[in-house]
Amino acid sequence: MPTSTSEPANGSGSAADARYDLAVIGAGPAGLAAAVTAADLGLRCALVDAGRSTGGQYYRHPAPGLGANRPDRLHHGWSVYTGLADRLAVHRETGRVRLLSGHQVWALERAGDGDWRLHATTGPDADDRATVRAAAVLLATGAYERQLPFPGWTLPGVVTAGGAQAMLKAGLVLPGRRIVVAGSGPLLLAAASSLVTAGAEVPAVVEATAYLGYARRPGVLAAVPAKLVEGAGHGSALLRHGVRLRPRSAVVEAHGTDRVTAVTVARLDADWRPVPGSERRIECDALAVGHGLIPQIELATELGAATRTTPDGTAALRVDARLRTTVPGLWAAGETCGVGGADLAIAEGELAAHAVADRPVRTALLRRRSRLRAFAELMAAAHRPGPGWTDWLREDTDVCRCEEVPAGRIREAVDELGAGDARTVKLLTRAGMGWCQGRMCGAAVACLAGGADRAEVRADSRPLSCPVPLGQLAAEQDGRNEQDGED
Amino acid sequence: MRRSRTPAELVRAEPAPAHTIDFDGRPVPALPGQTIAAALWADGVLAWRTTRVGGKPRGAFCGIGACFDCLATVDGRPNQRTCLLPAEPGTTVTTQEGHGRADLDV
Image 1: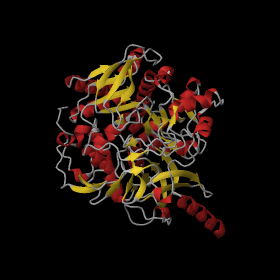
Image 2: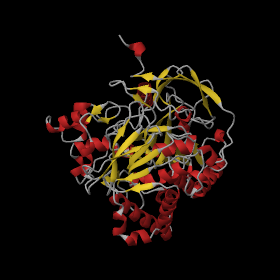
Image 3: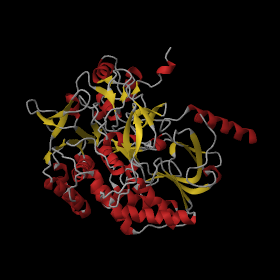
């Protein structure tokens, strides 16, 4: 396994040679907006992203080889992305921004000289390594989907709602022809809307909440009319294609042997407990499922950054009005500060760039950010999972997909062996110890261990934010020894 | 938004010519820029791995490289995330059984 320091894939000279004013991690809406704004303000930036192209998950788009003439048809606000991408192209031309695509950052550290070092894997096999040096770091790493397991959720054809969208937006493919969309949160409507316009039949959108939460604070809603228009757009697309919205319901089982062939949908009570006798079967060849998003913040929490618990029960980074985390020199923007969508992420990216550059911020931008943030908190409160969802688990339902740990073993660890948190459950059962590092089962395991009842949600601990070849860690240590030798 | 019959129609795609990858010994068409997982989905294939403990079929789940369910043996290397890897001409994909390191079993 080669472990030498690599040349970045898309430019000349090693990234390790340069010292940037700002390194932005993540080239989605928040990171893109931050990098181009910071460059506008005169900072030299590195924009680091694991993906092959910019845009993140939200603006994921077909590769050039697919020759899409109208990528905008798969997106809400596509021109916003192309505007940011054009500005990025200009700044790359002048050398103000260096785009480091295909760089997966696995750890951040503050070196003895006071600068940050970003350690990343690169190359097709993630076997190569790169180090990026910068005076300030902005974390714009977005979020991943929260999953709540149910019997049959490991069957092929059951995919995440975001995954169905990602595969559609980037690869122009669908997991099936008749796709049930289920779970909770605004992403479901967006996903269902994309799937039907791309030719799939969506027999039902199954949403666990009643959507009544939105109505409780009409003032907040009225302050963000664009959000209402966006929601109405999805709603009318669904109506036109005859998609049925089933509120206060959940998919409680997926059926099939080698792939999903049908799902059982049940009504839920206010605590998300399935109502006995309300079950009905819907034939389908795919299911797209998700229960909101979880901020991806381990690069910051491993440094001790403080978190807050969002109204939907996830841990997000605690930031001040200038988007500083509690770690000096580390800023955050977008979903890492609490999930709120692309518009908010862009506003926060601009805001954070101004803060890093120590420049004044327009009052209008501050107001826009607080309006969108208030709306995000309202949405989060409306879609908070109820504690009753665990009732639809069976003893043999795999909760941890990687290590194939069923609910019964986790309950045994909690009830009989006294495990009181996800970490102890992991040590006793291996749940959360696999390839995905607990990203798929972490929320569920925390609920089963009693974590759902706690006021404070703890961020999952991941000392390395992604799997890293051992050779790279060894090379890192060698590099340190060499440095010590020079001193 | 107008409804289209296929995703390619929706975005008025005019892709470069398709090539093929090899999946368990048979050719599967792939368009330039598609990932291995996307090419397999387009061919109606949803599973290309069996789990270590239960021997259950798995394929792409999260589609963004986070869940590691879509692992397969690609060009002889096990545990590759097919939702991230491009389907290059001649790529050989083999259904991965368990940890994909049967050659190391004693």
